[in-house]
Image (cartoon, rainbow, N blue to C red; front, side, top):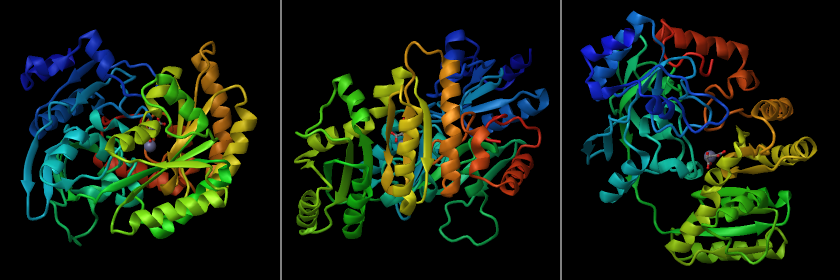
Length: 458
Ligand code: 2HG
Ligand code: ZN
């Protein structure tokens, strides 16, 4: 069997065909797919990844790169007997450069470990999201992960100074080598960021760290109507470089409350909630924020609100937003993760609300997201008695309308979760035929044997 040849360069403990391991590593957090890998391998360094790719070329074996498996677009699923290459044993932080404040890591370093490494040096890695405890930096780079601080700190892309990759031809490339300035032609590093494992394996990276923010203040506001969301956003973003502006609905809150871990600190229930986080940059920051809160209350744009008085209260407010995914996962949600430019958010949410109300009257629809950067998550919960196939068909019927709206507004069918298998049929709503043709040509240049994550994205 082909797989036996792997043991000529990998240890026994680095290869598994155990059914329970196949099941676990053959998938990510996406629902409605079935894992079916033929083996899982666990390389320990770039040289081993290179050998695995060479073996895959020789044996014509498709490979699926796998990180923390927290993806939500099935980008890390092996459904066709592929060999899954888990980077989890490549979890070492290799070096810290205290002149540049950059850190070199292997791809399997967990996001939270990197954040803590930065904190230990009085520094900050600002890309953050609820899956921080499991997601890995390589996967974050492969999907250009966003999360809750994009509005202030940008995406993963903005923090990657250099990459080591193994292409589909089995070559090792060192891209950008941590340079700040480098005008020597195409920046191939950026092709690999967000490539979802279709061009090569990201094995090591250099990540920029930054200074820690000053004290963060967290508000939770209850809003009486849809129209208030962007009005409140405008009033706060005019006065502050916001570090987060997140929204969720009463339906989302209902599921988080049901879990029983955390409750709303507000006295009044409302259809919409926003979480606003600001950095207390100077002595008057908090006064200005409180004045804005009052003003919005007077205008009726906010009906209730609270400011976290300590870090525990701030954490609890954040949990109301961050726990939504976990609180709804048992309902096998069908997920959309869409974006429009920020100035179109209002038009988008008003039209989207109409579509959802008209087309999903029988389903619980949970919507929430990073509305300050134009990204909305729409989760349709599957009623228990409905089978997966019928449910998915209904979801796709509505997708047509939703994506037509996205296309009209010049938005994206995937803001931060990636294309994977889930959004592949809809890519044309966001990318022109010419763009898709260039994407395919780029894929072929780096992976001429089509062994890397075949069937994903394109
Ligand atoms: C979040 O923003 C994640 O919490 C997950 O991107 C979103 O579950 C989702 O749809
Ligand atoms: Zn998100």
